Length: 195
Length: 195
DNA sequence: ATCAACTTGATACGAGCGTATCATCGAGGT
DNA sequence: ACCTCGATGATACGCTCGTATCAAGTTGAT
Image (cartoon, rainbow over all chains, first blue to last red):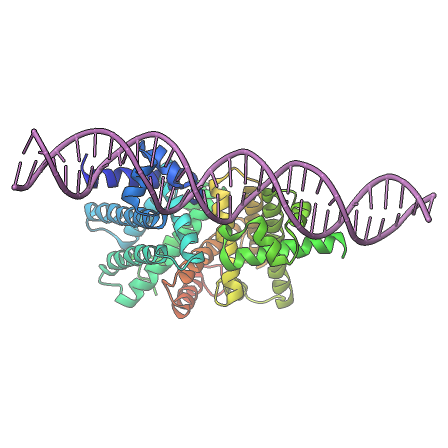
């Protein structure tokens, strides 16, 4: 097995643990068991727990961004509000995959908030990448200015993040969340450009 | 020193630790040091770490809700969008207190998400209490129906939570956050009732 | 004053953590 | 064929964690 394959095998295990049980479940030994390798191998490729976590989080952030990018690319043109709706659809934790991703996100957020870590950089990179791309999609509509596209992107990301949290906590149902999104989009205007 | 004073002294120490350094910093020994008491006392009043954490989180949640309640009460009547603006003002982590509270919130969220804990109940209670009160304030306007008030409350809470995360991560500036809020309120309509 | 019940402190214990050590394996260049 | 060096496994070390234990101190009713 090649070095990069080994590395991916281990980083994937970290990702699965994060998604399934959260940050506290990620120990070197748990990663080894999840990946089906020895503890020594996790040390060998991960170097240290901090490096391992950072690498895994960067990988996950990259992946999510890329997944979102390809989804948008395949969708092609279309209404801006349609694109935003697709973003919500992708971002809200409605299935187990989405919930796992949300757990990863909250873990990363907590890490970034409470430690002057390298995780901070990973989190910021991820947010910036997402915001950039979303602003680009919104700004593709000629009726929307660049600065306004950025604002809407921030607003949409915020709403999606917060709504995701309420959804995960069981504080709102999926139907209620969808209604909130629909209402937001309605008020944004059919072209996403009103005001 | 009375029993309840002791209890508060210790729970406050937990709260300070959570706000300053996050969930991972809360150990029985760290709580003891922060409260200036012996480890044994923390055990004695906290019973166990899980109970201690749960009690501290419930206390913090209650407090924040109460603070928000009194703030709204003192404000008295006024425009609905004015009340929502005040909510954002209170909820967004713009000063160190607000940031500490946000750290507590994320800690609680992660706990609620990754463990079938008692923390889950505390988190849900807090969210529900906040949503109830916010919906009540919004619904006080005769132009807003009850169901719609609930929807707006959910939307506002989501936006505030998500925007707070972006703010904490340094992904948006305070000015940008305020602009996003202003834009949202503008689109909501002067009476908070449009559509 | 006495005794019982509750408080407080010092210390110990077992478990799990991240990390380090050391020996063995296996493939590739010479 | 040999030798070298990265890859892998088994095991150990030191630390911190939550919790338990035991003794001493304190308080209040009688």
